Length: 227
Image 1 (spheres, rainbow, N blue to C red):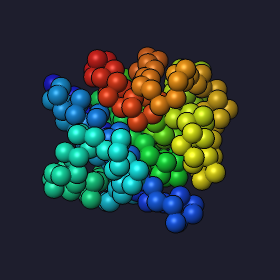
Image 2: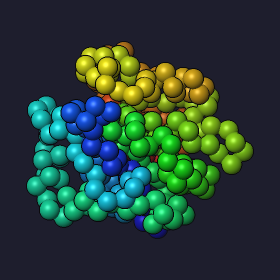
Image 3: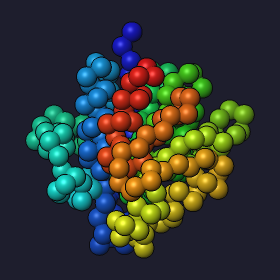
């Protein structure tokens, strides 16, 4: 049976300061999409509100704007997928074998407290599916609870964009909170690579997480291996 992936993207276009744009980090979607496509997995894109997912301007510049991202942006059909994403109430979690949370600083605003995404994530996981994220996408896992009331991330090995990387990226004064710190506060065993911005993916059972934009492909490959 064909495996199905639910890719989660943001609807947010700017930080608290509207003069600073943000959005989906495009390559974090495209790198994973390419890997899943190579395995002939069926893919759907969902966002917290449905509809348009704006692109992070920094992801459209060198060195982040690579062949994969350029190919997506040059394909009208692919761009249409980001212009008309599904809303959570259009999604039946039973149809999916894995959920993959993409990043970009925008997700820090609309991923953590969306009850519908939390429910979908819980249902996929408790049916034996895979929960995965890359970079800031792990903000979407912060408040996911299981049916017994426990936090999905408590006591789990995981990774995501580190505070050190926020500082080096010079956005530490813009972000609404420290995701790494919030993860540790929830009992997650946060891990990061020795060097910032290098590929790092962590697998803990059916939880697969990647640290930064350069980790999207490795994260997707580990998801595919589990599937």
